[in-house]
Amino acid sequence: MLAQSIRFTKMHGLGNDFAVFDAINQPLDFNEQLVRQLADRHEGIGFDQLLLVEPHAGDDADFRYRIFNADGSEVEHCGNGARCFARFVYEQGLTQKTRIPVMTESGRIVLELTADGQVTVNMGIPRLEPAEIPFIFQARQMLYTVDLGQDAVQFAAVSMGNPHAVLQVADTQAAPVESLGASLESHPLFPKRVNVGFMQVINPQQIRLRVFERGTGETRACGTGACAAVVAGRLQGLLAEQVQVDLPGGRLQIAWQGEGQPVYMTGPATTVYTGTVTV
Ligand SMILES: N[C@@H](CCC[C@H](N)C(=O)O)C(=O)O
Image: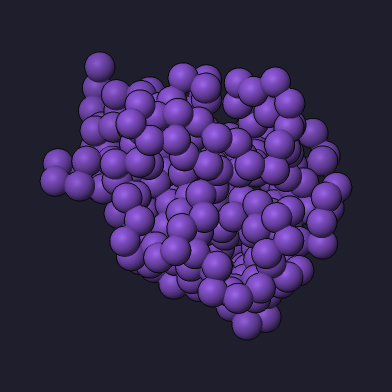
C-alpha cells in the first residue's frame, strides 16, 4: 500500500492528550494496529486518545465524534476530548457555531464554547442500571462489593456513555491507582472493561480524583470520570449540585441536578501544535 501523509492537531484537556484528525477533508482509514502505533510516545505521535471528526448524516447533529483509546479500542465517549473537539472544529473553520451538537457512539451531546475561553459540555444523562453500564450484577445498588482475591473492593458503577467504577478513598495520593485500577479495569464482571476512578471528598463542593482509564492507564484527567464521580458522590449524599473536581492535570467544574438530569462539565481545551504524519 502507498504511504499517505495525514494532518492532525495535537491537543489536550488538562493534560489528557489527543491527536485530532479531520476525516471530513482527508480520507482516513484507522485500524487498531495503526492507532496503537500512532499512540506510541517514542515511535509515534503519542496520545491518550485519538479523536476523529467525521460528517454526520442527519439533522440532529453537525458532526460525528469518534474516539479510540491508546490501545486501539474504539470507545463511546470522552469528556476532555469533547471539549477539544469543539475547539478543533471551530478553529479549523469546520463550523461558525459556538453551540455544537455532535453524535457519539453513545448518543448526542452538545458542546458550547463560552466567552471566557472554556468549553461547557452537556454530557447527557448518566445511566445507573447494571445492564446499561454494562456490569454483571442482579440489581442496581448504590455501592457494589466485589471480591478481587485477597481483597474486597466497594465502588459505585455509573455509565456516562462509557463505563465507570468510582471508589471513595481517604487520600488520592496514596490510592493504589495502578494496581487496583488494572485489576478492576479488566474484571470479568465488566464485559466491556471499565474506567476506574479514585475519589477523595474534600467537602460537598470539592473532590480530588485520579482515574485509571480503560485502554490507556492513568491519565492526568478524565472528563467522563469526573462526571461519574460527581454522580456517584451525589447519589451517596456526599456532594452538592456544583462540584469542583481537582485532577492531577487541573480543575473541572461539574454540575448535576440529580437523577434523570444531564451532567454539565466545564473546563479548558488547548491546542498544542498541528503536524503531519506518514502512515
Ligand atoms: N479521557 C476520557 C475518557 C476516554 C475513554 C475512556 N478511556 C474509555 O475507555 O471509556 C475522558 O476525558 O472522558
